[in-house]
Image (tube, rainbow over the protein chains, first blue to last red):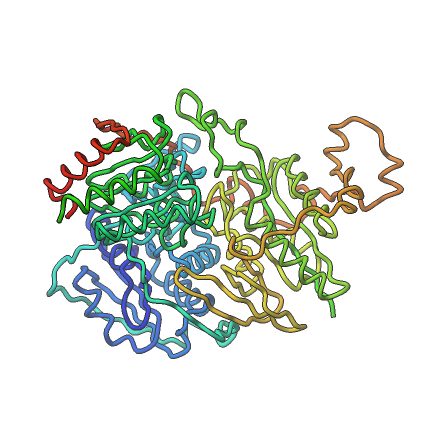
Length: 339
Length: 290
């Protein structure tokens, strides 16, 4: 009872990275709270799940195994979580802020009347004083997230309602094996007790999910473009530089919104968080929501025609100039000096 | 066959265009400097509703929003584009609502609208980016949900078929009516204002707005009842007060921080050939690249 739960997102029998990252974070939070780390897998043919997640320190793994759970639709998965949470009364429940987690989380939180904070960038444990009620709450989950378009950071708490629910984007937390030999308890749920036939009302007619082709998260070098790049045409220069350097192309939200780059390339609070050894920001002014997703890069080069662009503050090198002038030179001199 | 559709919309500060004057000297957000706009993805949702209305005569599109008096602006905007009528849910009782309390209030208002076949709303609002209100309204009403809709492929008396845009692909799903569908920004953009409708609804107003303006147009509104935008307070909807506003909001804001990044010691370069070549040599030498 009152443990920390992580919902496991599974695609083709593989637990997604975002869930493993949450298990890693969950393990350390559970240790602070002196409670257990539990995980829930809802899917079909889940025999391979335990060995994937036990090394991350899962102490209890709940399996809801039924053919009808795949492909994912909202209500069956929501019903399992709602009923399980009513029985187990977790103090914290974490989900990935993926399209699935953001579909499932609010449904569950609404049914349980528990607060949910989307897209947290940090999770901590701490106390909260409700001055009006004169009450102090110990060991709450601080759900920390940028708000207002990423211009401020808010710390949210759920003083009275349980579970305290949060979603976290992939790549925000680090995944780390706790103990390769660690093993825990498996509890198989009797599915018919958790879902009803009425839950299966959505029919998936077609499904095309691509394997991630673009892997900006693990690229050692990222050449990233913003609205200041000007056009999809100019973005080609970024691809060229990324290719010669052996990196990937990223983009700011403004560039994605303008159609210069695919959504998968978006870096920032509403995209992916990256930590490459080199980040080259081209025509990116540096909205906070973008900086939040790349500030941990080991080295940052900012190329901007505006000498006072906010991103310059966190850059190691500031090149004041036009992207279309500077990038060809970088390509040229890289090639010249590596031959 | 015709449908009753509700579009849920929100008036939001335009956080996408945060200019230099949007942050005050002390680093806090200057809300007054941000224009209030129609939440972009709610416009995509409105377009989907208007398309159904075009295809299926007799279909009625209601616009429902919760917000302060000035949120009536987005109701008028919807009327200009083809919505049939609008409802503003407004009042002190709703203040301090988080997503759950908002969803509860909206669900009570939707119940009051009678038999509804389809609820459409944007995937998320740009001021919070939570994407929670849609699914939570569906849950409160006991309806199924389809999120991330990019296109409504077909709607029949019983079912709706929707193309969903997910992180890494697409899905085509079919669900029974009544249902709630949240619409993605990748869906078709909303049509512009229609000139005739803009003229027709120019003076559409809520009771609060009429009172604020102070001018007496009673005759105008009596002669043209469609100019009356309905305004509901908490007393107009059947509700349990404990689920509204602050008391209905399980999440509390503990604190707000302004973001301060520690400035690095940076080297400034011009884009000259010599400087760029030196930089590339340096990066190769310290094994950052190459």
